[in-house]
Image 1 (cartoon, rainbow, N blue to C red):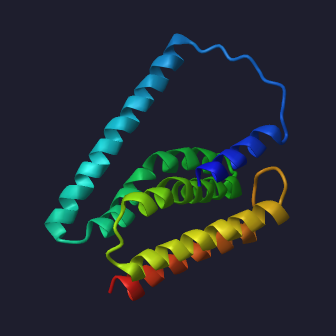
Image 2 (spheres, rainbow, N blue to C red):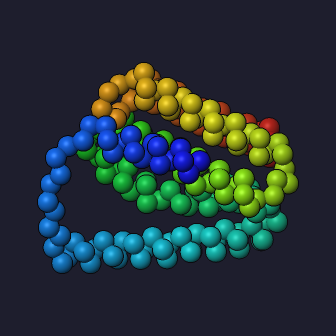
Length: 178
């Protein structure tokens, strides 16, 4: 997975290279950037701690709590970024951003960690998650390769990706977790 990530990163850097621009950060911008990083660190710690407490109070599996609580809370910064893009009228770009972020997170961050350190206690739950992560990745890749140029999706492609996610939620709620 790490090799695949570096191959992807290399092709993303090499393709459509543009001449760099010099950026001069003002002191206020540096302070805001540092404050943002600190807020993300504190928020991440809060998210994990809150999930642990909720899971223990409700008596549900840590895996289920991580999949539904931690993942939901961890996308809050992305919601604000997407809101900003959507507010400017770029709805397809906003949805694309969310799908890309979640696909990258699931494939590059969670999947390798799950393979290395997470004992599989519920094979049905694990298999359904793995299937839908792969399915989203395949459709995302196909849309990027055959779809609209310049890093965006057509509206119907956004609907397909969102539909896959809704089907995933329905399968999890009514099939796996019932």
